[in-house]
Each structure stands twice: as C-alpha cells, then as structure tokens.
Length: 380
Image (cartoon, rainbow, N blue to C red):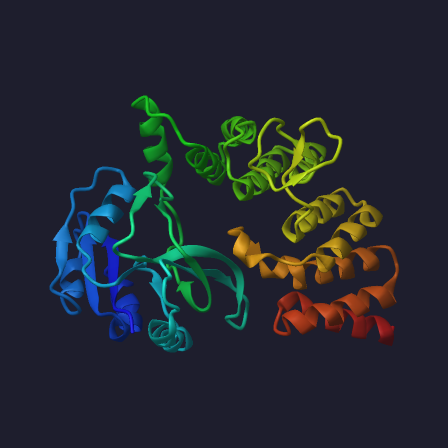
C-alpha cells in the first residue's frame, strides 16, 4: 500500500480548514500545512491535526507556495487540497481503496474535481486535475494564479474518489486580477494559460472590453491549450452578450468549432483540404446550449431547437481535461426544448421534453413548475 503526504497552503481559513481535515485525516500518512500569513485561528486549528506547520511569506505567487509545501513531503505520493475541499464519506472509502490498489508504476493520479451541484447534491460540473503525484518524479508548480503542476510519468485516471469543492464564500475579491496586472506591470510575459485566466478574471469583474482584447489575443496564439481555447470562445461570447451584441456572441461560439489558427498542431482535428487550417473540436454540448440560449433570447425558437437536440446527442470526454457541465448533456437542453416547443405552440412535445428533464433532475424547480403548468393547460 502506498503512503500519502497531504500538502496544503492556507491563509485565514478558520471557517473551513477543520471541515477539510476531518474529512481526510484518517487516510493520510502525513499532513503538511503551509500558512501564507493568516491573522485568524487557522494555525491553531491546523495544530489539532499535525505538527508540520510551516510559514511562507506571501509573494503573490501560488505556485511558489505550492512548491514549498511539496518540498516538505516525505511519503510515496503527494496529495494537494484547498481548505474548502473535502472528501465525502464515499470518496474517503474510495481513497483508502485507491491507496491499496493503485497499479504499480503509476506516477500521477488524476481525480475528478466536483465544483457545482444540483438540488439533491449530485455533481453537475466537474473536471479532472492532477491531484496526486509520486514524490520522487520531477514536478513543479507553475503560474502565479490558477497554478498547475507540470510533471511527467505514467498517468492514471481514477473513476473514484473525487474531490468535492464546498466553498462558503459569497463574494470574490479582485486578488487574482491584481496579481496578473502586477505581473504585467513588472514586465513579466504572461504564458498562454495565464492569458486565458487573465481574460476570464477580467470578464468576472465586468471589464468586458479588456477581456475581449485579451481573449482574442489568446485565441490567436498557436501555443494555447485546445480546452482553454474552447472555453475562451464561450467567455468571449459572454462578453459580447453582456454588451448587447448577441450576433457577435453567436459568432464567438461558432469559433469553437470552425476553422481557426493555421500553422499549428496543437488542436485536435484537421479539416482535409483546408490549407493548414484546423478545428478546435466538434461542437461541445456546453457550446450547443450556449448557442441555443442565444437564439432563445433572440426569440428564434426554431433556430434554437436543433442546437439543444445536438447537445443531447453529444458525448462527454471526461479525460480531455475540459470543464464538463453535466446539465448541458441532459437536463438543460431538455428544459430549454420544453420552453421552445411551448413558445411555438407544440405543447405535446414541450411536455415530453419536460418529463425527460425530470429524469435528470426530478427536484428541479423549473421541472416541477412546468408539471403544474401543463396540468393547468390540460384542465383549461
């Protein structure tokens, strides 16, 4: 059985740190907490679980703090978590099983990260992350913000366990945005990954024009990761939509599957006879739903319907590393098809799609409200 060091970086996490450590402590062989400047009871709480608590002066660099935390590990593998992450009881048991049954020769373990949930607590948004790495292989965290670990070796995708993100925050600061802008001010070049996340941060803070500029530059960079490119098309669409440019928003979404930057091999598909132009990928369910939603806003319900139908036909590739919205593959297109057919007076089809939506999320407020609506229609 492998041994595991849990390495965490924390700052002012007194409200969630105990919850996190309670959920994982009995599965860990070592717990390392690196504090980057807490002014609350974080270190006091950490001391209930471990005596391996270290201070690290905050230098606006998450990767540097993570690398420091990893340097303190001594077990076979290193697992990382944020303070507002947990293992559910089921995932705790699965992690114990993973420790016992991890195949020989594995260096990197990818685990699902569940970050959004439906009314019944079922994950509806997730993606895979490099969650556990063998301590003795070369590895390094990179990126001041939205850091990622760079490592090579035999990779294993674990169906279970997953890590559950349970944030209690009700608002988010502009810390990440300020770090990126300080990086630019200091003359440091942003990597393609940084450009993507900087553009996303700008959107979150409603700097739509600047976000559009940054994301457009990122999309023209041949070295960007395809999954980030597809996501960038979606965020660019949101920027245009927020500015009232719905047709421009549609154009941005279409860019996620139409011919894009030539003379690069970083994209997945190449169109025969396209003189070197490439495709990011076939339309994703998430993109199809976004297109359908825009047509609905334009009250073009006939145009919206085939996009939601296509979303239902797509299959997710969880191992691609993409952000995956479970709702976009089932519940969301069904509930929107219900609305579209209702607007067109096609009530039987509308009710049929609402029933199908209920098979995905039977406790959904929209589904339950629609049940009442169709019942009232039949009575009238």
